[in-house]
Length: 137
Image (cartoon, rainbow, N blue to C red; front, side):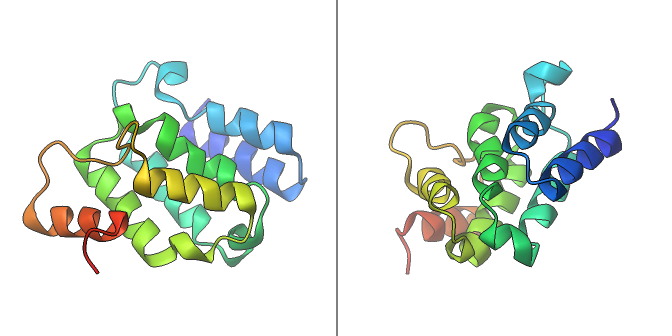
């Protein structure tokens, strides 16, 4: 299944308001499921674009989409993590659903995994990471 087909499957599940199909569609983007050593940029960028939709801020399924960045963090490169950090800094507080809010908090402050910690951040990426974690105000 192509990336476009996977996104159509996800959008269809969201339109139909079907939680299990949303979860299945999100698993279809996983690195192991696709034998990827790294998540493609297109997947990360399109998921973040989807999350920016005004309806997703209210959606009970936003947490499932956000959870992708937690589960797949070992397969994200520094640039992709930085895009996610930028998204969380700009939009992380806009989610209304409790599960989505919980995942945002886990991505920002996880003591157990540092899901979005970059391997070789440049100075701007490091400042954004510190801002996301609340180390900088």
